[in-house]
Image (cartoon, rainbow, N blue to C red; front, side):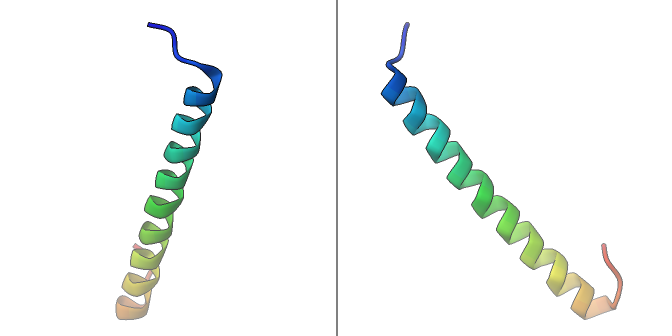
Length: 41
């Protein structure tokens, strides 16, 4: 099945947004752990 260029760009945009959210949450979890223990996990 062939997808249109516009559809593929939309999928790429959505995936990038998802990755940014995941990375932001991981970074916040790391900061919280560092503040709790004083060490980087």
